[in-house]
Image (cartoon, rainbow, N blue to C red; front, side, top):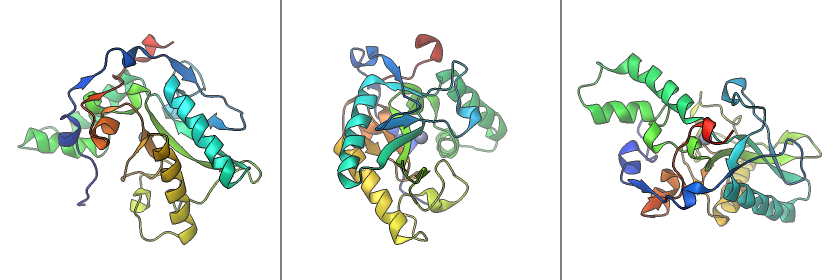
Length: 225
Ligand SMILES: [Zn+2]
């Protein structure tokens, strides 16, 4: 299907990351809190190191600001993060699994990389292993549920995960707009292919905001834990 989502060929234009900002530490998101909570929805996403989601420290600070802004809209709202840091080793494993399946089917290597990139980011440009990318939504703490966004978070099985999906309710469209607006206000870059995906400091962010370098490189979990 044709779309205008950011491609592998776009992301490889960002060749470098800043070694100083990449030294920044990781923090674990709280499981319970009035502002930001981190809760995995899928077991396979969990790190071997525990049940808490890890992100860069600046990302957490920004999420707190996002949550405080949300409270102005509705005091019951908070930010729920269902995925953050992914071990670079895992990214490479998933990528290589698909690569093994499809290699030989493509004459053009770039075409093959684009095809795989739509399913799983090519490791060298991937966002989650930097600790800068989050999959997030707005959570209503009184109703104990994620607001209606027109599709379940992390459900890639239908095109309703596209930010501009047409066949969703007006309420869902409005919730997507609100989430995107407050995340971008804090400097996160959105991704049109998944309404829940936002990043700060990775190559996608650098490309979106025309930065020369990313702030963070991809890392293995053994560096953090
Ligand atoms: Zn994501």
